Length: 462
Image (cartoon, rainbow, N blue to C red; front, side, top):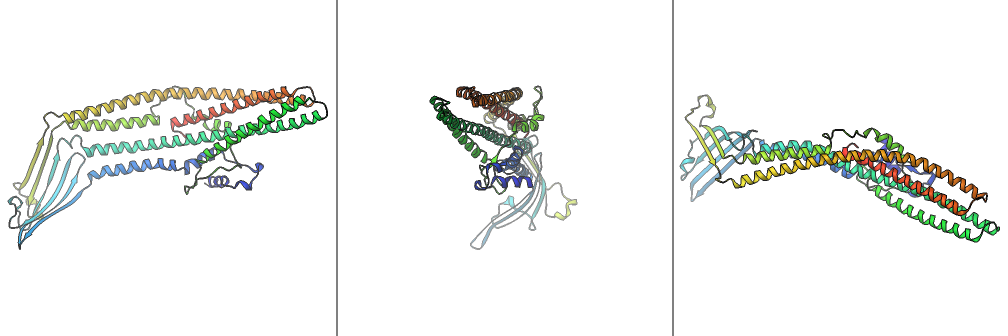
């Protein structure tokens, strides 16, 4: 934690209080740690888990015990027409069975006879059962099962969202690194071109060089300055894009200053850090986060299909209650005193229910095809990335040797030029070849780093 705070303090240092030699290093691992800990979108991804927990809490609410009371009365010109009071306590269960206890106390001159109860009130206790829409599957059973699946799915969703954010953040850092390497390259060759221009002008004044050499040296210097200005612009843009991912704990955005620099040996660090995450071509992808996410989707749709299939059954509700006006004497309960009822309904054609079931089946089938396609795409993408990573790694090692050889050629040609044994044209030609090779090396390193990051994104293994 102290290291993170220290890095953040370094990033915020004012540009006017440091020089190039005092530049600060923002390491890639420290940078990723800051993004993981403070970036708003990473925090937002964590809300997916909270959302799933609240949805599960909501679905469990369908099974909460309930207390209810009803009062209805009418008085007119001093006459009590009716006073109807009822209170109930209900306990729903998972399989559609509901236990209840009720109390009724009714009076009045014009009370409906069916509401007539003893003067001390009437107590009842019993059960009700929704046979077809509760015993096998019901809305609340489906909601609870789906909420539990969604809770597991939310963990995978969070990991996928964070992996996407960290991939974008890593790409921003890699682009920043590449822009910085190009900036250093053009800075060094602007200095070389400026030194040669002064040297050629001096030799021209001494009569050792023709005027055409001063023109060629000046053209080279001007071109190098233009290239440097473009590199400075690219580096500034890359720094600003990188700043999008730097935040403090208090959700205050940070900005990369001119003193902050990336890792010089980024290739070696990333190669060592992520080498263990490279996978075998034939590795099983069943545990891949995206595959698991789609499997959870399929499970949710399967529950929905079962619910729609249950709708084809007729509606059958049964309820039975014992009644008494002496609740303290339940042992002497008269089984002849009861309330019983049932209701039955069945649409003749079931067109709505059959249509909803077929639509649910289509959604399941679509999800199965999506899962099948995603499995193949991810499998091929992993193979492709592994080949890319291996190829870019080999290219980088070869280009590293090639760049070193070109550097020796440039040094040798410059020494020959200083001794008068070479021409400005040859020196510029050697430099151009070196610059091309160096830019190619930077490009290959950038591709390698992004391929490694994409591999981790697919595996959600940052």
